[in-house]
Length: 312
Image (cartoon, rainbow, N blue to C red):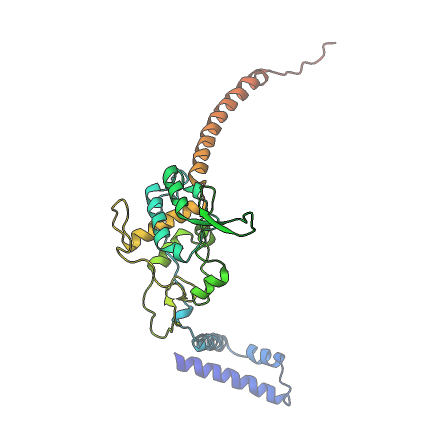
């Protein structure tokens, strides 16, 4: 088959070339069209097939010449069945409490939550007394005092979470030039939200063949480019939960993702609770308005209009 296609295409090209030579070298698109029109139907099909095959081979060769390395690939995180993703589902507060413990003991060493207040922990993660105690453990920079100097004081419920570094330059210097992002709204800052964070925290592995990772970097296929400046942080039994839950990598990742959803939306449960009340009230209002409409329009719909001719 390939030989037949090759002979037919070669004959068609030779015929077109002979027509062009006969016109004293005046090669133009019109001459090619004329030569193609003179071919038989079978030869036209063969030429078309040959052209399509040539274009396919050229495209394939061009694609193969483009170097594709493993570091340019990026995995998409799978969809996780989060317990708070439904329209009427609340946050798992026990998981959020454990997630706060993971953040405090692991993440807070590098990542800030400078838009999170201790008062937001009350009723959702900690009791009021526990939140006050947590805030008091933090030393908050305040001032200036009467001498114009800044000073440290115990935290209050109205204070934000303290930053682990004095400024961004200090954070970069401590992390090989990389600035650890703030985690307050991280659950909303990524396209796949909690799915991305969970996959990133649990997706560390050895770099595949052909991929070189720089000094001080780790390989994570879920991170764009593969090379990430943050090494693996979660290990089995890396911390000890207060409630006795086994601290596996997946459990800690799940809990800290739940806590990040709470920090990104402190009003999460209240918003859904208000939404349920509005839906219930809307249904009741619909029934009342429907009955009122039928009551008000019943008399009008029962009216009968008739045209009677005038009696002379």
